[in-house]
Amino acid sequence: MPVVVTGADRPLGRALVRHLAAAGVPDLRAVVRDPHRTAALRAAGARVSVGDLSDPLRLGAVLEGAYTVVHLDTGPGGDGSPLDTWDWLLDAAEGTGLRRIVTVLPPGTAAPESPYETVVVPGPDTAPDAEPDPGLVAALAAADRRG
Image 1: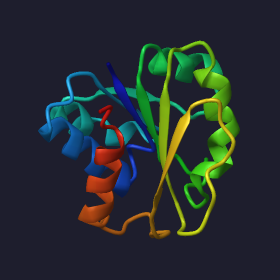
Image 2: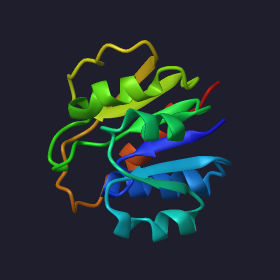
Image 3: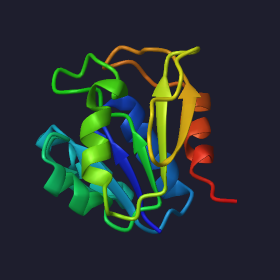
Image 4: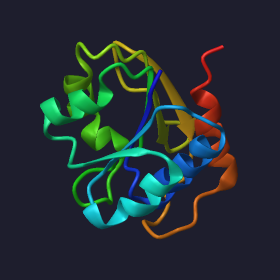
């Protein structure tokens, strides 16, 4: 079953896509805002969708049939939190068969309400160009495991 990564044009999302591809995830999908950030993701083996999360029909098509979405999109300015686009994600996911949402939030932040199994991986707020912590990338990848 597919795995979708939102915010895949940011350092953490790119690192996660590379990690999941190296782990052999067979149907890996990436959502990016920046069309100039697609080549490396495609080269890693991901199917890439360019757009933002405010279009529920487009995002819903990307989520169709996915088991997990790793939600890292932080909003149009890129300086927010996945909580800023949470409602858009939930709207788009309705009726797609999605089962699990994995996201990164600052330590101590509670999981937002969701009709899906939600996994919050505690992580630091990082600068848009900062190299992501490999431990955080591994924790996100591990959260996709379906037992």
